[in-house]
Every structure is written in C-alpha cells, then in structure tokens.
Image (tube, rainbow, N blue to C red; front, side):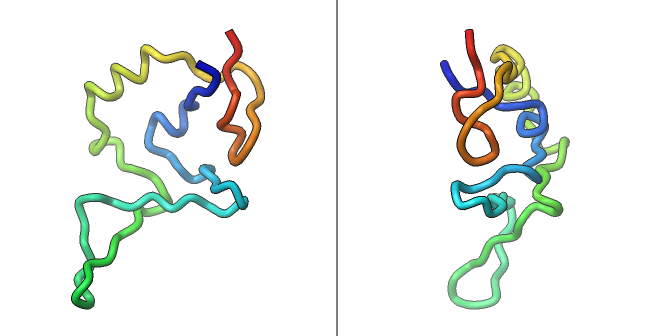
Length: 85
C-alpha cells in the first residue's frame, strides 16, 4: 500500500480534493436528483463536504483500520504515494 487517505477525506471533507488539472473535484449527493429536464441533474454537496450523519459507522470503523498518510504525497492533492512503511 503506497497511498492513504487523510483525516479530512475520511470525515467527508473534500474541500481540498483536486483533479489532476488542479481544479476542485466536485462531490455530488447520490440521494438527490434535480429534475429540470428529461434527464435528471445532480446536486453537489454544500461546500464539498459530505455531512457526518451520512457517513456509515461501519465504513468509519473500517477506515480507522488503515493508516494515515505519513509522507508528503505526489499528484493532485498530494494523495498519491503518501504512505511509507
């Protein structure tokens, strides 16, 4: 394992999650659909943060078993190769 997710992403905070081109990675709410035409649109999470009450407790326990990043990463948001054993 070379890459780990930090506390912010584990807590649903994607305000600093970047695409490879440096733009913000938008996080959409899977429980909402915006019906303005024949095709449903999507609703982005406010401030790009998934509310804590929407994070499943079992998923949080599983994430807690994985280590946090311990070295500076590379790539968008420094999320690649950010864990050294």
